[in-house]
Image 1 (cartoon, rainbow, N blue to C red):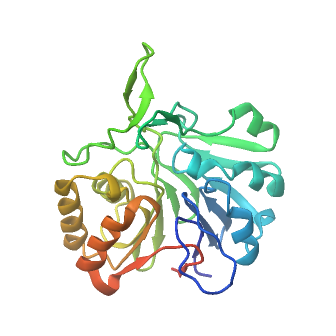
Image 2 (image 1 turned 90 degrees about the vertical axis):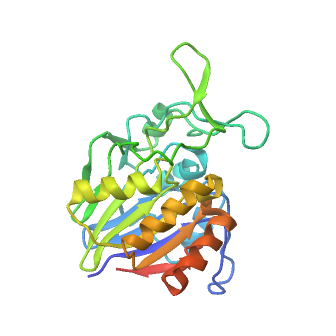
Length: 279
């Protein structure tokens, strides 16, 4: 049995069938694996139940939920999913519930997990926190802390957190994780938002897995918010690694998607709601 990835929540819908799929600002991907079904992020909570029903995804069969980080547009659907699953393991970074703010809209907004940890635990969330690489299931390795080495990946200055003294600082987003999937064709890197930087994530993936062949990168790349220097370095690195497929979602943005499409041609695809990828 192969691994199948299905995009459940994303900003856009390219699929004409089934009719009625909805887009929202957020991301969620369903994984069907030989070890069972898993959910990577839950979107913002506006579309996940509608899209899961239309795509034939049954949340009662989930073996676990994996979170890329603690922003609302990746965690907002959790309550609805828990109503279907009951008690279930949730794999995430220990900083999942840290304070997250954004001033991208011109005013300061809280954008963290919408509910307290204790409230979610009462609904069945069994949090399994790890800052180290964690084997969720055979062929599924959660990245753990991603070292920030790249000099061009400086993060989004409009994303803020609170310092120990109570002031506002640029959010380090230590909770940003990615999922590394082993396949016969090489490594698949599943991204939430890539706040740690695509270059840093790739280098970490190669180091902790020992796999030098990157078959596919799928998910949000955060290239919408990056400098031209970071954009060029990212494109060059993906070309250098000869990545077979690049599926862009969510925070990649139109600018990032256009540049990826121009550079990689048929190797690029839009990972929109309803897209299924068989590995």
